[in-house]
Each structure stands twice: as structure tokens, then as C-alpha cells.
Amino acid sequence: MQIADFDFDLPDDLIAQFPPAVRGGSRLLHVEASGTLHDRWFSELPTLLRPDDLLVLNDTRVIKARLFGTKDSGGKVELLVERVLDEHDALAFIRASHAPKPGSQIRLTDDVAVDVVARQDDLTQLRFPRPVLEVLDQLGRLPLPPYIAHTPTADDEARYQTVYANEPGAVAAPTAGLHFDAAMLDALRERGVRTAQVTLHVGAGTFQPVRVDNIADHRMHRERYTIPQATVDAIGETRARGGRVVAVGTTSLRALEAAAQAGAYDLSRASARRKSESPCGNLHAGSSETDIFITPGYRFKVVDALITNFHLPKSTLLMLVSAFSGLDTIRAAYAHAIQARYRFFSYGDAMFLEKHSLA
Image (cartoon, rainbow, N blue to C red):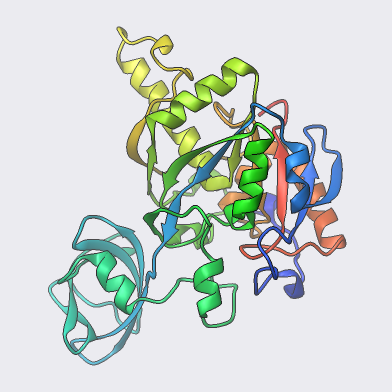
């Protein structure tokens, strides 16, 4: 397929620059498996979920990943940490007139400098003198997406974070989760809907454009994920009761599908190991990295329904939801959303997508 298949025209005034006044105050476009569309409010979500359904939440926490400094030459540098590798090392995108060379330093303050270790494609490995997360918390700035024009405020630091964020490491929020507040989660549990957690640390690559015409030539940045055993067990129990696995956000979906894909690979390598060992087929607990790229034609192994925001034209996430609900259905849904003036992207409105029968 071609990148042009995933393009659409979006008026600038539909790009949400601020969150709604209260969490959960957004609209919700319900897209049935048949393609039928329903205009709703996010507060109506409990009516779309059934007892015994399982919501899978991504509990990653956004870190203050944007830093500013100077090179040895005095030139200005902007850093966007893409991934924390270990306590003192991270990979970052660097914006500078001339990229700093390995062996040089970038000074963040008079007493804090990071070492430039090596280049890795379009990323640079940096070594911090103190724990990376400690430095980011002290000196970093919240990395709002490039389409949000204002400088991050204290309100952004609260609202560009889910209420269940727990594991620091993301440089972009799992934005479908921004709609949930504690009262909504309590209401769902009272309805018999259970929740489970995964962790996928969203990388800055989520905003990187697809620069090829043929999408099969695109390569994703790798992201770190963890699937707890309790989540695998909860999915198996949900299947046994006839409930649905509902991913909150494309990040939760990617973690689950990547783990199932990795499980299938492992099983193919170990003839003595049988699917019955796992309560959910090929899905196994553990931590790994993924560059999974989901496009139309992908057969989903775990997820039955998806809660997500509206995504950028020509983006890998638009390709993912087109795989989930069908390209024609997503085209129609987005055209309707634009006509009905839904708010788009990170601070925008949400969709509830039922999986297309061929997905």
C-alpha cells in the first residue's frame, strides 16, 4: 500500500491545543464492526462495555524528556530523550546546527554535562553523570507533541499524564488513557469490567513521519514493553468467560500483539512447548522490545476492541486503526469526525473501535 492511501485534509482549528475542562469531557465516536457510526460522549463508555470485558491500560509515565544545552563549541543544542537504556545512558534525538561528535560533551548547566558516546542511525547515545531520570526530573521539560503550539505549563504536567501512570519512561503520553478519571474506572469496575496493566514506554518515534511511498519500506523505532503474568492470566480468564479484551490506546494494543507475536515465534522454536501452557495461546509474560508495524491485512491475535484518539495523516497509527477496523471504515469515520468537528490528536476526542471481522 502507498502512503497516499492514509492521507486526509484536516482543518488546523480541529487540532486540540488544550485538554477538555475535565477528564472524560470529550466526545466519543463509536465505530461498530459493520462500519455504522454513533456520536456519543466519553461518559457513555460504560454502556459500550459488558460485564466480563477486560480493559488493558498502559501504565507508563511520561518523563520530562526535552533538554537544552550547549556544545563544546558554544552552539545551542536541543535534546529529546527517546529511550532510557539504563541508569546512566539514554538514546536521544539531537537538534543542532552541527551534530556533536562522539567524545564531546553537551553542557546542560554549569555543573551538569552529558557525554556523547556514539551515533545509532538518527539517534545519539548519551551518558549522564547522575541517573538519567533524576536529571530529567530536575532539568527537563515535558515533551508536548509538535502540533501543540504552547509551552508546557503546570496544567499540562498534570493533564498530559494518565491517572494510573506508574512506570516512568515514556516521552509521549498513551493519549487514549487521558480520558479516564478515577470515577470512570470505579464505575466500570462496578459494572463488572475488569482492568489489567501493561507497560510500553512510548518513544519519540511515534511522531516521526513516514518518509517512504510504499509503507512496506518503513521501519519503526523500537520500544520497550512489559506484560505481567497477572495480565496474561486475566486475558485467559476473560476469554474463558466470553468477555472481550479492550485495549486502551494503540500502545496497549502494540504491547499485547507484539508479545503474542513473540510467543508464536518462541513456540515455533520449541517443539516440546505447547500452547496450552499459556492461558491465552501464544501470549506469554515478560519484557522485550518491539518494532511491530501493524498495517491492513494484519490478523489480530489478542485485542477485540480499541479505545483510541484520532491520529495524524500518513501516520503509522492511522495505518494501525485502518488494519483494526478496515481502511474504508476508518476513512468514513474520519470524514464524519471532521464534518462533525471532533477534536483531533493528543488532547482531542476519542473513538471506540470494534474489530473488523477480517482483522
